[in-house]
Image 1 (tube, one colour):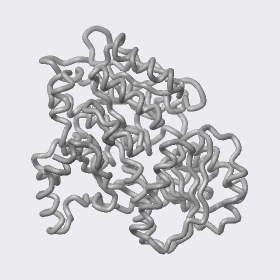
Image 2 (image 1 turned 45 degrees about the vertical axis):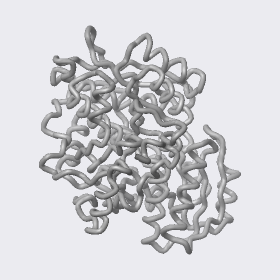
Image 3 (image 1 turned 60 degrees about the vertical axis):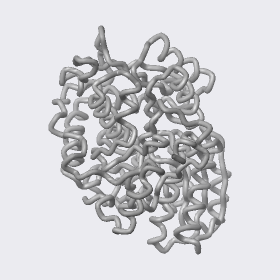
Length: 451
């Protein structure tokens, strides 16, 4: 699949080059000279077992995984433990990562923040001060990510944010040099969904999101996107619910009577699971435009027909048809056949959604660190700022001024039956949304971006 970076109009190319220093965004270098994910370097992963991963000892490279491993969102801890131990196992079989003049094996240090702000700060500080991790990695929930990045700045520790989308995390108030966001923003998602629907007939949308900073920003981004790309659209309802909801019936009843043609949400698990299951149980079979309802476990719970027609807009899909993606899927699926509980279910069978995209971006982080050749944060920052990389899931760029990824996005309508799952809908061929239509906002109050 061709990336949109290679098909920009000439006028746009000239404009981007001329303002590149101001924006911190430059078009990719020629593919020949661009650092790239190398599928041929991946180890034989048939012996990978996340449930019995053994951390190496001695002079290791330490990844501090900060996530909820207990409490209502402990599912996220399971998911991202799988991601990080996969990366560690792969590199450890290669002999480690080359930094500071030698190869170091990778250790994954677990930090359980329980999805609680006070605990998050305490655990992040422990990872930096006691465990002395080289990088922090996490975490679900923008309100918690903000705490982690503040700790990262205080202790000058590289922090990779691969999952929290709230725009304001990287604005003039909250930005710091040690934090790099490898995932899209709320603006990128909202605008991408709006652009996708500008090519479709649906006009009536109902917004239902979680009631905290992320939920409100992702709702705002969609409304802004509709004004830009589909001004004739109508928001027939908008509501926000508390985190970790059990009963969505009051919200779903309102949706039933709204005349909506599409439901738009940014909900993540367990809310995403409960939302979708209860909607289908009440006979609400509207398509849901989402980012986190792609988990096959959720899809299987509502049956193949229950997921058919849903639209997942994301920076990663297993149906991105490239040699690297197709090969990686085979490697992953072969390894999955030997996975043990809790990873031996349909949920983990393919590198889908959040798991797939965070693995792709973690390989980018490791590539950056190897090119820096050092655990020194300043040397890592120097390489990562402005870096362009051909990742497993497309060309990505780290905008230098605000450490925000710039990339194409993909919208996939879910189909059933499909080539992946017997009892669940899965993404069809993705619709490419070029980066120029879903650009992350450049923070107006961040002085670095004004130079």
